[in-house]
Image 1: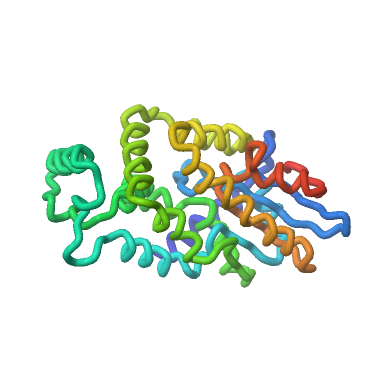
Image 2: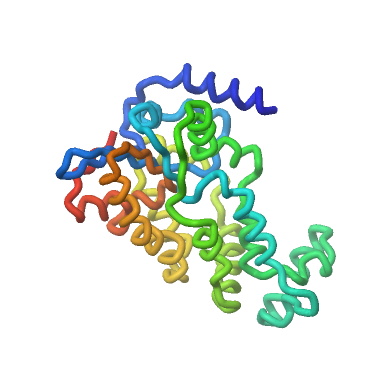
Length: 283
C-alpha cells in the first residue's frame, strides 16, 4: 500500500502542469525581504482531482519547512485524544446531557441504521458530529496535507503544527453540552439539504483560487451558530497569526498549509497578514 501511494504521488508530480487560474497559494513577503508561502488545503480529494495546481509544487520547492494546522506526526495521538474525550465515563450517559427530544431522535436515527442504543449512549454529541463529518478514508488519504506531508518526508523537510494536539482537540472537547447539541443538530440540518455536487463545487472553487467562496460556504453552514464558526475558523486564524509572523522572521522559508476556508474573507489569514503590513501575492 505504501508503494502504491508513493507511486501515485510521484505520478501526480510528473503530471503537474501550469494552471491558467490562480491557485489557493500566496507568497507573503515582509519588509525585511523574508518570504513565506500560504497554501489553502482541501482536507479530502479524489484521485481525479490530481495533479494539484502547479503553485503548490512551486511553494513546496521554494520552502525549507512546512507547517500544518497540526503536526502530522501527532495526528494519530490527537485522534486517540478525541476518541477518549468523546465518551462519557462509566456510569454516565448521553441521556444525562441532552434534551430528551434530541436523544429520541438519535435513538430512532441509529435504529434505522441497525445501530443499537448501547452503541451510542455513552458518546458525547460533539463526538457523534465528528464521526458524521469525517470524510471517507479514501478521500482523506488524498487530501492536500497528506500529499504534501509525504513529499516533505521524502525530501527530508521538517514539519510542524500551528497548534498543539491539545489546542486542536479543544475545538470540540471544550464545547458545553448545549453547544455540542447545537453543532450536531446543525450538522443534521445541513446533511438534509446537502447538494450532491457539493464536493465538485468546492473543488472547483479551490482549483481556481477562490478561497472567499469556500469561507462563505463554512459561514453559511453555521449561520445559526456564528460563535462556533468563530471557534472553528476566525479565532484560530487570530491565534495562528503570531506564529506565522514568527516563521517569517525565522530566517527559513516556510510553507504554511491550512484549510482553504482559513484563507478567505475579511478575517482570513490573507487579509490579516495584509492588514499587518505584509505584501501578499496570489500565485
